[in-house]
Image (cartoon, rainbow, N blue to C red; front, side, top):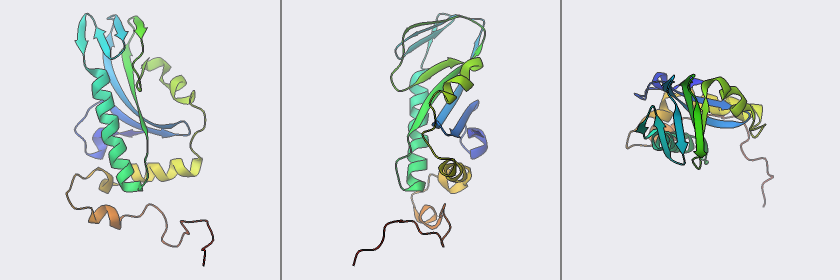
Length: 163
């Protein structure tokens, strides 16, 4: 688990989790003792509407672009909203492409995805996510191109050359 703020992005209480179930962007949002009502993309906490679902999707898309650019392949990131508090959560419809849960059930949600990524790939993605080049917003891609997440001695293509 990586704190997004430690990676250089100015976002608090947001974490990048990379595990066998996939890559997840977890936003921790305060709930307190307030009732949460969830109806699709609309989330109300204590009677006030918040754009948590849109925020989670936008951040997950930003992380997807950054990781995919560095890796050179599409890395899907699933947005997750974890509500910190002990109020009731009423669900009248779940948002598409975004998970919403209480912080107490976060581990169950993340492990329920099974093993979609091999342990070796998890380690590689974690290494890429920790590297500062991944999160730079420069116009030049020279540093991204120079950074290799694999050993230069490693064979990247397992197919035999045709010739």
